Length: 300
Image (tube, rainbow, N blue to C red):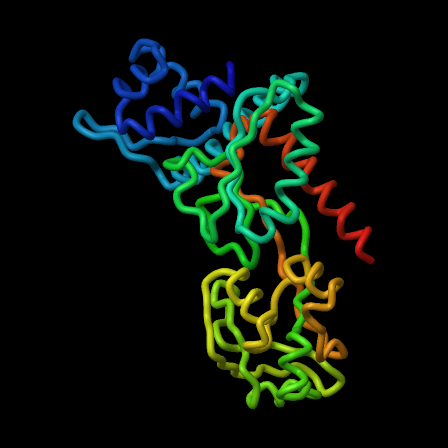
């Protein structure tokens, strides 16, 4: 028997809830669908369906087998799609979404190098703090940072960046520098509430882990507004190093409490699904990961 075809017929019949519906989806006769299921049950030595003249339902064994079949068939489709596209040159249009700061400083240069390598490709870069529905907006890849709780998307970690606490020289001249995390309770702390937990900053030192509740004169759901406010002397910010590294290099911002370890922020590339991942997306993900790794090594 053709076990693979039998599995496909079984999944189609289970999905349709009838042999007629399953056969129609597979473009075979009802009799042929019945034959495939019978051969599969004979091979497995177990009944997959409870059959009556009016209804068809899965047995307990059938329900468990259905879950495994779906996984196996999905893996086969993905493998076949990958093999088919192994020698396909990236082409067409790639739409990428990214938060504004990392998009301008890092993703855009990475895209420029990527385009130089692939002449038949064009890229539409959308700078936005939060991506919406990837499918509805036609986004192939969305760059985001922090934890990924939405399991409806596939998220690939492409880099990570340590958090740093910093403020402007003018702010420190007027208010002094915090020496321990608890000092932040007496400082204006500008909060990016897109990075959880909101209004709580975590530190790890010789005394163990500490969580400090902070507040300040400005909050935002993106990094750039509070980064600019910090440069203007309005308070302290805790942001990923890649966002403030150039301001630190130029002396606009100064790092404080660097004796305390702050958990790094993961940078993810998010895409709608993994089935039949196109050559343009697959190539861009590999290029971006390598490019960000090179940039990180250059800063060290």
